[in-house]
Amino acid sequence: MNQRTDQPGGAIHRVPVLIVGGSLVGLSTSLFLGRLGVRHTLVERHSGTSHHPRGRGNNVRTMELFRVAGVEPAIHRAAATLADNHGILQARDLVGDPGEWLVKDIDPGGGLARFSPSSWCLCSQNDLEPVLLDHATGLGGDLRYSTELLSFDTDADGVTALVKSRDTGEHTKIRADYLVAADGPRSPVREQLGIGQSGPGELFSNVSITFRSRLLADVVGERRFIVCYLTSPDGDGALLPVDNRENWVFHAPWHPERGETLEDFTDERCAEHIRRAVGRADLDIEITGRAPWHAAQRVARGYRSGRVLLAGDSAHEMSPTGAFGSNTGIQDAHNLAWKLAAVLGGWAGHGLLDSYDLERRPVAEATSARAAVRSAEHSHPGFAPPAGGGGGAPGGGPQRGILNVALGYRYPQGAVVGTDPTSPVVPEKLALNGEPGTRAPHLWVRHEGRRLSTLDLYERSLVLLSDGDSDGDAGARADGPSGWHEAAVRLAAELSVPLVSYRVGAGSDAELVPEDGADWRERHGTAHGGAVLVRPDGFVAWRSPGPVPEAEGVLRSVLTTVLALT
Image (cartoon, rainbow, N blue to C red; front, side, top):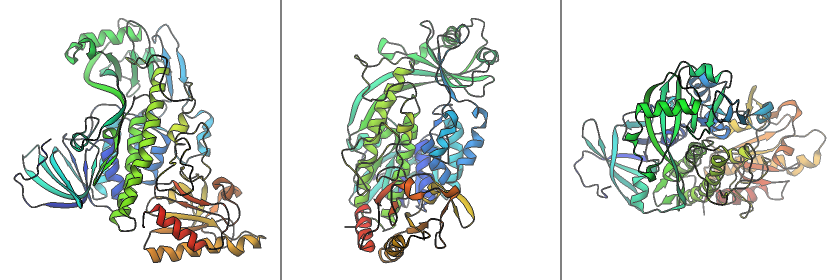
């Protein structure tokens, strides 16, 4: 990439945030910034959203974020065709082997409802991206496809970029306060910044083949899988339904290290490979497309360089098993969006952006290790685990620990107070109990006559939860609830910080009333007179187990630390 921006162009386009890359992570960044009222421009070199059915697994945490952003219903509508596909199957072939369910049901018994108002959703990237694009544009996002980043320069106050329309050839100079690089695994932005990567590197390569077959639905029968890993030595691969009827995807192993090229994957070769994998020689197959991809395990050594921040595949690559990569990238975008909004809005210091690397990079390192373990367990085509069975992550077994990775990860360091910095990022047991650095607990409450999850409260502001009046508990009323609530109201005005305080309970002064008599204190790890501060991204920033003598002074200190106001 040319590092100069002194090329022909008209007037400078000024915007707070420039997003480079318009795939899932770039579009999610646009959506989340738009929800927070942050003006931004997105440039993407391709002419539109993805046409290839890939990246289909959206985990529960990602769907929580889309719920709060108002797009969850539209995503479920886009995903309706595969709504009944739940399991992960492994079989020698589909004719002579009923197969083994590595995961029979992604949410057996509906137990996930205890932890979340959302659920997993199978929505392919080609169906999801248009939903995100529509909503991001509706929020005022300036999204420019067929527009390529040619160069950028950084200085202490921002980034100056030169972009080119691939349709008209017109050059535009953009001046932004911050640049978010969501420009893929071979990120030119990361390369220019000289940010290195750690990790094992290349893992394996596949060719993703789209095809039509009417007879295959009869072979599959009632086995409604998300993916089926076929292990026949004559035709290993991964089969994924697109509509359960006649459109399918098959991931075939590709070995470029042996001299194989994409041109070697002719229609005839692909069709024969699929027939051998399925176990039916007369299967009707019409190849409709092929796309090569490379799986790798790498994490950038830093997520921030001055005014430039990395997100998604530019920051981390991981094995596709479990769709951890796309979900981790979308969650990067959400973590980053509120911090950019806070800094640009003047209610947080620039140091808050340092917490993005402190929080998200360890999550990527832990998650990528777990993803490699899953690939070995599921016999992903082309993947040969390291000698000795390594993968770097405990918690083996085809299903064990998935929810811990998807929902239970935590931030031991960052924009948090009261954490143990030595604690593991991914715990061995799921514990969403209000501990600082974890995703805040889900609790159904009534607010102004409406039923909502406590997670629905966390998006545009910090939120303080404290006790409402508790009948017959004069001790709690004396110091706890009124002290925290009044302190939050005063500090929000004094510091010009968007901080909303809710009192929780059954008393007359409570804004939030838990359903079915649920004990909010028990769920959040506090006693009478305690308080919990939750960030706009739904993570607990700090917790006071009980009342304190000087609530306002304590809360001021916490806010100053979390928001890097010193």
